[in-house]
Image (cartoon, rainbow, N blue to C red; front, side, top):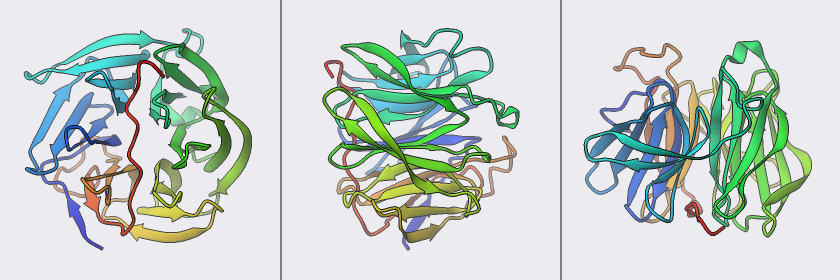
Length: 298
C-alpha cells in the first residue's frame, strides 16, 4: 500500500479532510487548536489559518470561502493572507440545543449542496445524549434537529446517487452506524436502519467517506485502521495505519484515487515526532466521488 505521512503536520484533533477540486488542494482542521490547514496537491506547500473559535467541520462554498460547523453555529469563513479567518455566522440552534460545553462536530454537504452537521457535548466521559443533526440551506436556513439523542455524532456520508445517507455515533457506549433513505428533493432522511453494529469490533466508527462503488469507508478510532464496507454492510477491506486514532477520511486528488486520513493525538500537544496526530495520504485502489460544494441556492 502506497502511503505517505504529510511532513510538517501534527494535530491534536485532526478532522474534516476535504478535497477542493477548484483549487486542487486538500483542507482539514485541528479542532482544539482552532487551525485550518491547506496542502497544495502539486507543490505540497502547507498553509494554515487561526480561527476565532474551534472549527469542527468544513465544506467548500460555491460562492468562495468555506462553510463550517463551529462552537456557536454554522459560519461562512474567509481565509486571509495574514493567516487570520473572517467568520460570519449564518445560523445557530437555540441555546437550549447548543449550550455551554457543546459544539458542532462532523459534517459535510449532501449531493445537492446542503450543509449538514451534528452537535455534541464535548466531555465524552459525561455521556450526555443531547446532540442533534442539523441541515443548513441557503434557501431555508437551519432545520432540525433532524436526528436527536446523539452522544458523539459522526460518520456522515451519502451514497453516489445521494439516495442513502449514513450517520454514526462514535461514542464508546454506541459504536453504531445507521443508514437512511434520503429524499433528495426535500433534503430529509427517513427509514432509519442499522447499517453496522461495531460493538465488540475493532475501534469506534469515526469520520467516513463513500467511494464510487458505493462502499462506506470508516476510520476505526482506537483501532488503527480504515475499513471499507460494502452497501450490504460486509467488511471487504481493512488498511492498517501508523496512528492508533484515525479520525476521518476523504477521497481526492486530480483523479479522486487518493485517500487522506486525519488522526488524533490523545496527549493533545503530544510528541510532534510521533505518528499520533499525523495526516497520511494513501492510494487505496478505488476512486471516490466528488464532493458537492455548498450551494446558497440549494
